[in-house]
Amino acid sequence: MKVLGSFLFILLFSTFSFGQYDIQGKIKGLSKSEVYLAHYFGYNQQVIKDTVVANEDGEFRFKGTDQLPKGLYLISFLKSKFIDLVVEEPNFSFSLDTTNILQSISFQNSPENSAFYAFQKRMNELYTAINQPNLAPARKQSLIAEVQQFQKQWKSSNSHLFVSKLIESSFDPEIPVYNGSLKDKADTTKMQLFQYHYYKKHYFDGMDLTDERMVRTPFLQRKLERFFKDLVVQEPDSIAREADILLAKAKDTEVRRYIIYKIASTYENNPILGTDGAFVHIAEKYYIGEPTLWDTSTVRRMKERIAIIKPLLLGKQFPAMYLTDVNTKEIKVGELPFKYTVVFIYDPDCSHCKQETPKLVALQEYFKSKNIGVLAACIGRDKGAWKKFLTEFKLNSWVNGIDIHINPTSNKEEYYTDFRNRFDVYSTPMVYVLDAQKKIVGKRIPVENLKDFIQYLETRRK
Image (cartoon, rainbow, N blue to C red; front, side):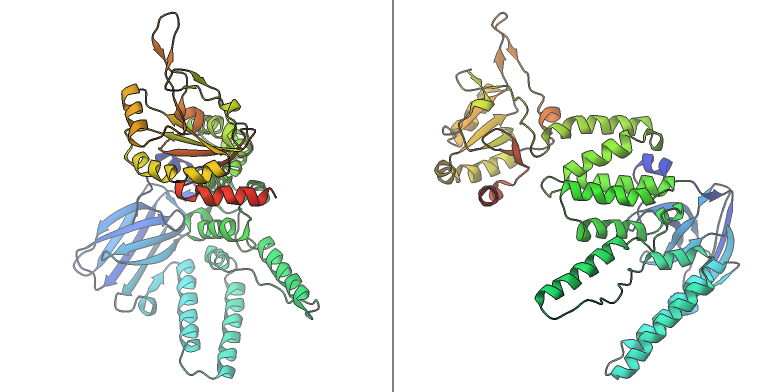
């Protein structure tokens, strides 16, 4: 059970409510224990709305005048046990026995939950029968047909209920039969492409993106994550295009905000190289471009974040980095004569930097054979610590720089580089890879993967 940590999200996703609620429960096997009422916010976060203590007979009551958002809730008890229930009607009651929750649970004054658990009970019975050992194939096919018939009838009978949307949103789209030829491997590939494109195009058909209650279920988050992870090419243009298609369907304000937030947060610092370009697209189009969806602090943060990330996208010219070498001579990054330049931004006092530096030194011979240079940029401004680091790790073959500049008039030290905001250095070491024209071709590459990454670049350019 988790309380949603961000006050911003509680403000953003807390409408579609009624004025008061009264939910009574009786749980056999529960005595004088705390019981929690919480609604889902995706599948891995829940927002606690009420807490009570059951009496010695397992009876308890959630009652309040505060707004209770509609959606899928859970009631948690005995630490590890919980039940899901739909909060659509403000007043209802239920009872259950902890020895067999599914078979014993019953509801009063709640058509939504009565239908919800009737569906679960029957599906459980059918799948228990299907999974029996040594089941005859004909009987298994008959039971599968019975499942399909039951689902069809249940949907028809309960189409007016929100729980019908819940059940529908948990299903995958059914792919129609492929009618093309299947004579050879090429035909099989065509069939697979047909199935993939149909599945992808219809993946969200069962999810009502106009109903804000879907935000308070586990299903929207699951579908979003699976869609963008498994069905979308992890390349910024593809991600941006699919996000635009999806958001064109998401008319409800809360659903729209949730989808925008989930996609943006997924790709802001995604480990897959280059996908931060999708974050920039989302942030510019749906945060900056739709400011009425957000509070001013969120829009301001996005503007600040874009200002940092956008100049550092793949293909961009590496921004000016003002460094001087051990002889206080200015280092001109654009004039470094390497086919590739590994920019290693570090802090001499950083323990992780001390672990990674020897790994980079070990690549020295390989780098030399490929005309690859290392520009080591120290973010600290302690010359003594910097020079000690250079000596300790024997970095004399690298281009070593520090952001310390002597003002010729005052003879005082000046600092010109804001590493955090100029190069997005929120942890060290930070690695960029530049091509011969000093354009960014890689970033945040783990040192142990640099050789493989360079080989990938070389293969791609052949």
